[in-house]
Every structure is written in structure tokens, then in C-alpha cells.
Length: 143
Image: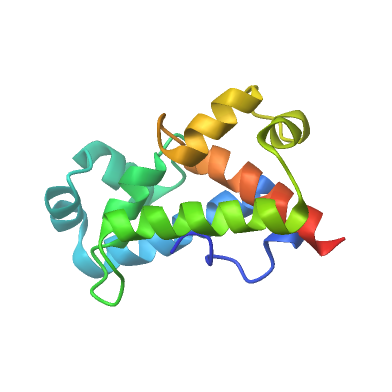
């Protein structure tokens, strides 16, 4: 479900966590094939091919969910995104963290308002942003 790509996200760097997401996605693309993944997910074929070949830090969470949903053992893309948002919001609640704290502690160049918009799905969130946010929240909750 993306958020479960690594067992202990607090111990990873945001880059390593993003790579774990991409490995999870790459496994799905390998199983179904690049052409099928692109056609069935609606994600640009060049993007899917780049993912199959290496890293794509600007891949959106929505596109990642569409690819992940191709795995028949997983729910549809919308459910994946909603579950991910719930997971992040629960981590914020557990750690007593607001969006301004996240913005101040992750190296994304986003304001608290922009973090909030990304978490709520009002703006595109990339895997790179997700990794930075998830890693910060996991580390904060480990304290």
C-alpha cells in the first residue's frame, strides 16, 4: 500500500524509503509487463518504462497507486490512496504533529499549507514528498 513498502521507515533516509516504494511498484510492473502496466493504469508508458529501469522521484502518488492496484491482491487505486492518507493522518495524530511542523522538518520546500493540500489530495503529491513526510512521521513516532 506504499506506506508498508518498508518495515521500519524511521530507520531509512527519505531516498531509501522512496526506493522501497519504487521496488514495490517495479515488482508489479515486472509481473504484468510495461505495456500492460501503462495501458491498464493510465500512467504514461515512458514513465512506466523509466520506473521499470530505475528511479522516478517525480512519480505521483496517484500514478503509483494506479500501478500498485494492478496487483490483484491489492484494492483499487482510490482505496490505496485513501488508506495511505489515513495512515499519514493517524501518524500525525499519534505524533501530535501539524502540517507546519512537517513543512519545517522535511527538505521539500513546501509550506504547511502545501503539505496539507498534498495530504488531502488537493494537489499532487510525489513519491519523493511522500517518502520525506512518512519518514519524518515514523521517526517522530519512534521517540
